[in-house]
Image (cartoon, rainbow, N blue to C red):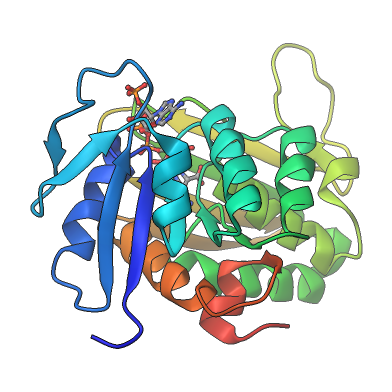
Length: 265
Ligand SMILES: NC(=O)C1=CN([C@@H]2O[C@H](COP(=O)(O)OP(=O)(O)OC[C@H]3O[C@@H](n4cnc5c(N)ncnc54)[C@H](OP(=O)(O)O)[C@@H]3O)[C@@H](O)[C@H]2O)C=CC1
Ligand SMILES: O=C(O)C1=N[C@H](C(=O)O)C[C@H](O)C1
């Protein structure tokens, strides 16, 4: 098939890796050629997914041979893979969350060499919600208090979720502020009354919750709640595969999932 792309997955044995292998299998225009796993992992040398993709830790060879890399792993392995992709000139899509500000800067740095797309959430719903949150926040102004609640499965290691931060940034932007200046990530004990313009984050972890986010805009006498519920991880995998196809023809630069869904702003 014309324009077929060959993808190496970083974190292929994880929850998202499994989803990517399953969701790519029926596609005619994408082929997963390498399943990259943690060096020393028990699955090195085995075959993963419905198409029995070879699992290896040879990042250099796999990334050099790929048209695009898709990463859902850890901040450290994301950055390692991105550094290799920058050297081999391979476009890079990542959904790994929990990166520090310095790690995001490092990732950003590679976008001068390659097309790089990082998104805290690849679903159509969350990327639409982000726009609604900015709009609502601008409309209601500072009389409304903004709080963001997120819920995820018991295995999630970072908090708050990347998506919660993404929505918090939209809420802050809607009021002409930055999240950095107004975020409140924890309350415990005698914390005093809520600061005006604060954007609070609440985290729930339990069971098999795929991912739920609610932005509360609360005033005296009324409350607006904007909610997204993911019930199937396949939405993130299909979004990332769509992004991989899209980024394969883009020049070097930093891209978002919104560029894929709504056009480059
Ligand atoms: N943007 C989005 O839409 C979404 C983002 N995510 C994010 O994606 C990331 C992964 O999530 P999830 O799949 O649930 O997590 P998992 O823990 O299930 O998967 C992560 C995988 O990365 C592997 N890994 C660790 N170190 C390396 C390494 N050095 N090289 C290669 N692989 C490595 C782990 O291997 P091992 O287990 O052997 O250590 C594991 O298999 C998280 O940051 C999560 O928040 C998740 C869903 C959607
Ligand atoms: O770890 C997860 O599972 C998810 N992580 C992403 C995040 O941190 O926002 C996206 C999604 O909610 C699932």
